[in-house]
Image (cartoon, rainbow, N blue to C red; front, top):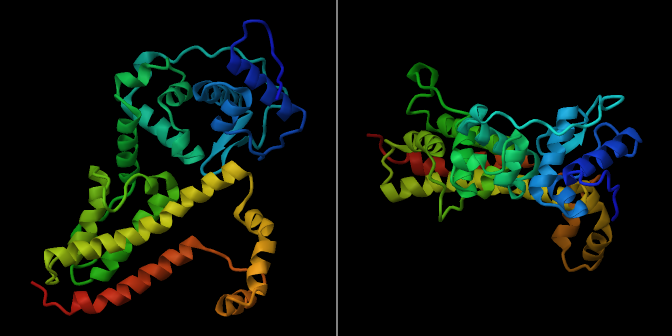
Length: 323
């Protein structure tokens, strides 16, 4: 694809800014429409992701676009009627850069575009600092991701005052609170569920806070250490196991340009072929019972699974004498 080349010697990111600005002012992109993501800009204009991130940052500074979590970058609701000619932004003073600002900028990128769009250069571009500046505060992207995870898990906590918390005998309410708190964090930051497996857990202090809350709820009910940890891991896997689909769906939508409903609509012939084959009668009966198709609701599945797990665990936990 060809693009306006702009003035001789003009930085590549300014040419990208000019073209996307033109699409917005010409009405090709309306308020609320998605603009190309960092990865799409990099691919379409054949530039580095840091250059793409710098262009989108410049458009945000102009007020032409805005970032919406799990949607990405969209045309602002009220873009400027006559956007000012873009001038190269002055670098932010290095003294204003802090580790907290770097971590928050990285979280914003991951929230909007997914963890795969994150890069150290992209964070620097978002903050308007030199590409290598973040390395003065954090040595690598892997280290940055751990700091991001710790900050994100630290956004929610639990009652410190015993008067505000369920009593030790009310283990179920404590676990429900822990599960729903984690689910809310994964909902807010879907990339979190991609970071650690059950066999290689993520060891950051603020995730341990959530684990400590659940272990405390289970403690004192006579469970041996292995059973105690088995139950804890089972409960955690329910939350994380559903949460991984939040990021997968966001990535699939960004990659294909199709919503979940649009994707399913395109596969209606394949579904009809399975139903008409006669090989899957139970599936056919279940599908036929829906007037408008099955609506996969992750929040409802989370609550259904949590209740089923706790109902099943009640005889095990309450069947042991408390200390």
